[in-house]
Image (tube, rainbow, N blue to C red):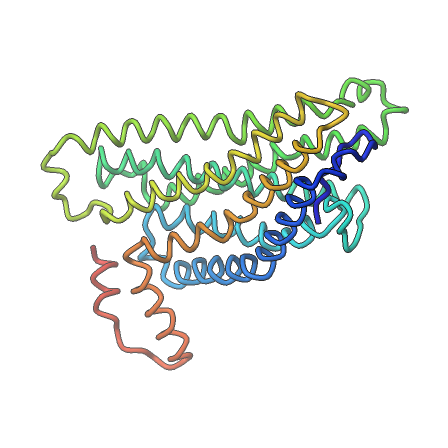
Amino acid sequence: MWSCGAANGTGRAEDSPLCQHAHLALSVLSLLYLVVGVPVGLGYNTLLVLVNLQDQRAMTMPDVYFVNMAVAGLVLSALAPAQLLGPGASGWALWGFSSAAHVTLLVLFNVCALVTTYCTALLSLDYYIERALPRTYMSSVYNTRHVCGFVWGGALLTSFSSLLFYICSHVAARVVECAQMQHTEAADAIVVLVGYLVPGLAVLYALLLISRVRKEDTPLDRDSGRLDPSVHRLLVATVCTQFGLWTPHYVTHTALALRGRPVDGVLLLAKDLARLLAFSSSSVTPLLYRYVNRSFPGKLRRLVKKMHCGRQSCSADPAGVQQVLA
């Protein structure tokens, strides 16, 4: 599914037994993810969205961010077969598509990557605000929904640079200004800076502030309106998972942009592995939400009960009413 040969056409890397074993291992991992990871990601992300949207009054600030990450995860899971089995899978490609389709998939992938990393960063910052100033409107569900809307809009605008470079590559002969935009290093630099460095620094700053707040025991820590303590574990697990899985993608992305042509076969192999790790984040995040968040089982029971009742009126759920009132 992947080719680990060098891009200069010599094919020397193809003759290496180590390269062949790496090629086989990546192919097996890719097929395993497509068979297991993609269905798990689609199922749990859909469940995460439905569980929270069926009772929006009970949603908290972290739930809004995880719903948006789940939507991005659904798109990533849908893109995975086309990306892992398409023309990028040299030697194992099961189909091909035009340059326009390739750019569309690239734009969608970048949008989902930006939404995922920025939702993680903003979740960290809002969690600090909620710890320092509980019950403040700054980290309310209402504001969080609007912030996530701006995140999706900003991700679309940022990923528009890839589309702009594609358009200029076709009209460069007629538009002189496009001649200065033939190098994709600028677009790669924008993606790495905006999509990784900025949210990464924001997460580090937020975690530093959270660690300081947690050391200070104040009467606000006993406020019944504070977030559930499991949210902190969920936050740390999400930050470590998301940036752990996306960091190799941006590192190899930067290395390829700086190296230019020809590209070493090992670097291409690392790029393919990093892309697989990035796609796997769409399956890991909803599993973390499922097993770390304490409120998920109760929401799931209410969803199942609501589906079972259908159009008939169901009896009130005491746990759900208490959560809403709280």
